[in-house]
Length: 443
Image 1 (tube, one colour):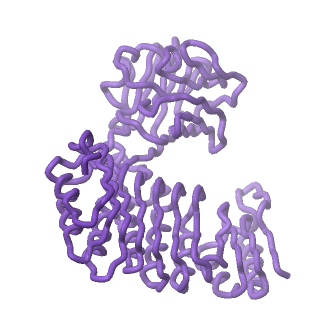
Image 2 (cartoon, one colour; image 1 turned 120 degrees about the horizontal axis):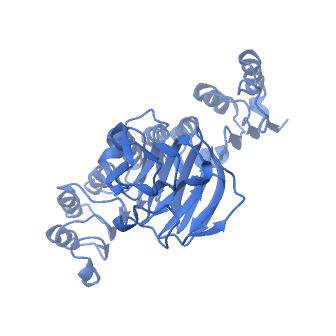
Image 3 (cartoon, one colour; image 1 turned 90 degrees about the vertical axis):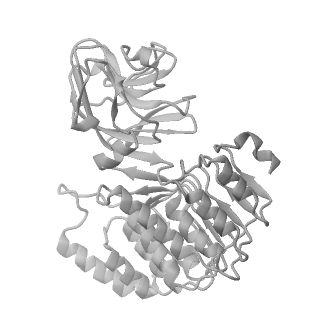
């Protein structure tokens, strides 16, 4: 037998595909067969990290392994030169498998996690695998990675795991690093508050009442809206009350205070999805006969590339295009009845200011014999005080050979930008979003 597929099995009434005893027997059977398998799909078996690692150890000729959705290229990680998770969801178990394979790799030169959804703990495990292995890694691509937590890890701990990933990857062979536009999922109220991703008092109808320090909002017998305090690529709301569904609306709007007394979709700068399955824009119905929602449902909204999408209980329900990047997610009510929602989680873009990734890179620049030439740190929000000086000092080291640097969006001061520009090997410097953006082309 060269291929075994257990994916696609439907769960029983208790939500599991197999009972505990049957599942344990199946795992043991798969372990017995693993030495002869080249392709293994465990999508319906719900294995744990230890079981997955045991299968990897036993499956010496295994080429692919599917644990949930992502098909892990086991063969590529063992003997190939590149591995990509672009657009995939990398959970903690997948991270454990990848980390274990990286410990044994002696050939991997390119690791690309761009655009993936990566569990924070998975990032740490991958970094651990890189640190303990001897792969001659030359390219590390982390652009637009979303670090997720499942609500189990505090926001600050996610940044520590980002740093662990970068620290593990840093080695003398590394030539190119792209860790631009990182995003972190926030679930705790303190993190949501720090990044203004709660319902804002100044962006709500006066009669709307806030709860949980702005984590929930209630609109009752009123015509108006309430918006989050900042822009986010994603928010998930739990509908707590929704009486008269055709009067409840969830969507997004540009934050003009003059429109707070209007429902979402009543003007050219807002879009609203009503509880009975209609979308309005400029007071007109632009879509109808869509899935409805009710109290207890989870509504996730995402905004990327001008596309505003709604997901209801994990299923994509609708999307509209041409939405500006500056809209804030929110909720509204028209006429009588009550709508109340609570923020479950949101994504913070540019949250770390790149400090978690910057420090390990600066250490590498100071190591004699390093090959680092290209560093992209743009799109990670405003940098903390002193980070620009730290990078400038590293660029000034005799061992530093960085020729291309992107610090766009860092909001560095003019003197910090000039210090970076004076690096002797630097020939390309992106300073857009800094104090000297207008004159960046002269450097």
